[in-house]
Image (cartoon, rainbow, N blue to C red; front, side, top):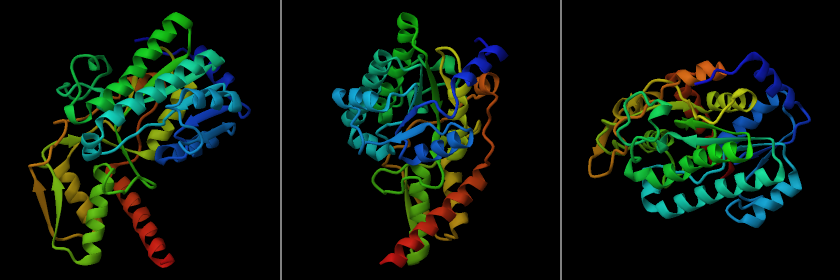
Length: 331
């Protein structure tokens, strides 16, 4: 593993200034909005956020049109079709095809268009099901991902292959970061497609409002997950844009795991829910354990997560309740 030199770091920062046109795909979404704020705070005000309403990146002609219209010198590819276990089980083909095509087409035409810098944002779902904990980047190819999210994880994993192949053949400057589950203000709280933290927050908040005696949660509660506060993730990606060199992927995570059972108790306490938490073992737990080794991020980027889970949950719940109150007032 090669550590970035001071000279290469300065060169990278020199190429990026307030005039640099940067396209952030998925920039209108949950993580994208926080990333746009982080880029602006660094003086990179030439960044433009695009979403699926602007361009359908699974359509080759629209990917080409976007590049011709916006002429970016750098791209941060956040755009993805994502969801929790239920959504992954219901739409595996959609998750595979759309994630694979939008990334592959975008990178190919970015290369042809002379884009100078491409940051691909991947996922912990790409790791093998039984990866030793904490997950080290060297273990990425040592097995098949957990079945419920394998199509999504493999589609995103292919962008690492493409990045490395394009770097080798064309000298294309593509780098990759891998994220754990995110959470925070602005998350997706849709019961059909949300991840575990927003799903639990919604269930607990609604039970408090209605006086419900219990909430039902998928699985046994024994699986573990790692959660990264969205603002920390945005800072990590912005730092990768400025500093990351080479073709090897870099984990961005909080560096510690929590059992879903304990997470549910924490969220219930924050929401003031005092009823029963009922576990449904007929539903899948997903991957048994997930936790990233973030040593490489510290060494190459000088980045670590700063927001404790308890604090992040408190902020997220406060934001969600404020949104519900505002929505109720508009009725």
